[in-house]
Length: 258
Image (cartoon, rainbow, N blue to C red; front, side, top):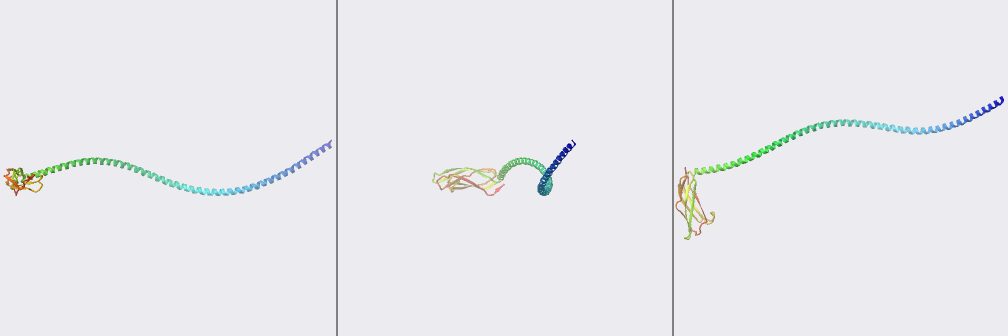
């Protein structure tokens, strides 16, 4: 019985040892394969790591370049900010200047409006004064004319002033024309008209036109001032049988007595 048990135990132990050896052999083979796979993976990872290191170096270079560019941009930004601050200050100054100019322009506009109103008022006043001056000039002209007329009248009244009112009666029945002249002579002046004469002229055409066809002079003598005398008998004999169409007269004197 004991022997049988020992045999069985030996058999079981042998089986266990055989299984353990088999399992150990299989396990070593699997680990070898696994190690080989891990080595291959490690080599592959080393290659990938090298590529990654190269890429990292490139990225680090790019980062350095970007940092330099960022630093440059920051400097430019700071410069622009400084310039912007200066421009903002200039804008504030310009706005103050514009505000002052606007205030000045408003003041000038008000002053211009006031001056325009003043000019309009002055123009109206000038227009009225011009009309008044024109009226006064017209009055002065009229007064000057009156003065001239009065001066002439005074001169006339102070001197000698002969005037006549005459009529003529023609008679052309004898082959020649004889003109009988009658009338009166007045001295409207204050001075005596000395050695006065009056000459009568007869013309063949109206308006004292043409060659004189008959002429005669009548002696009047001295005619005192403010005196009227009758014309002495006077005739004018023409050699033409054609009656004169117009006639006239003219006075002549020598000296004057007041």
